[in-house]
Amino acid sequence: MVFARTAGGAFAGTALTAAAILLATHAFAQQPKAQPKAQPKSQGAPPPAASPPAQGQQPQISYTPWTKVCQKGPQANAKPVCFTGRAGNIESGVPVVAAVVIESEGEARKILRVTLPLAMALQSGTRVIVDDGQPITAPYVMCLNGGCMADYEASGELIDKMKKGQSLVVQGINGSGQPVSIPVPLADFATAYEGPATDPKVVEERQKQLEERLRKLGEEERKRLEGR
Image (cartoon, rainbow, N blue to C red; front, side, top):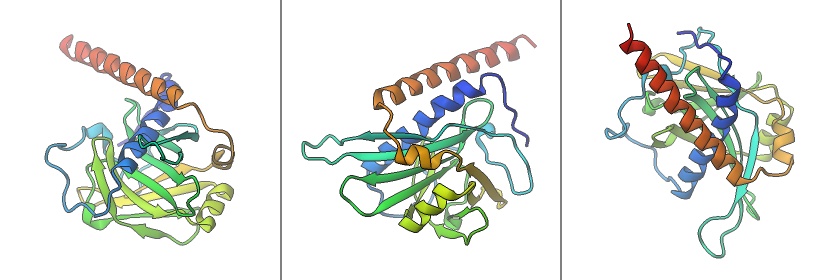
């Protein structure tokens, strides 16, 4: 499968950062504790276009810029939580990979949350590799409509490697038993991670724009098929 980048890819790519961060925000609030045993039936399988590429294929993926968002939870004494993430998406705007660093103010422990599409072999878990370094593994902890997530402890060593590295490779096994390996470029990660946060309202607005664009793309595709 080959993914193409269109003129609208830049717009969708920017907005997809919102999708990746909002997804991580919602999942973080639920505090997942256990590895899922099976993919939730109510979610169903994602459309074919959302399937990640098997190893050996060289798809063209549009990546969002690294974006940092900080916000407080609903509790009165909640501490701010910051999310620094980016996503990779195909032509339709559907993400095939996301990586978000999550950190709470005053807490030493940080999380690197990676997301792959729903059509993955959950029992196989995930791996991440920075450049040519040693791979580290983690199980899936939760599946939402946007994909299945795995959490890694974002140690100071891992964050430092991401700041200096060129690529974070996210790996898993798809539902067909084929290995999946998707790079997430690390260019500008250090700038976003160490820089000021983007207003959450701006991120939400980008998400709304993305949803509207996807709705229009779906309508255009429906009309095209009906006109055949």
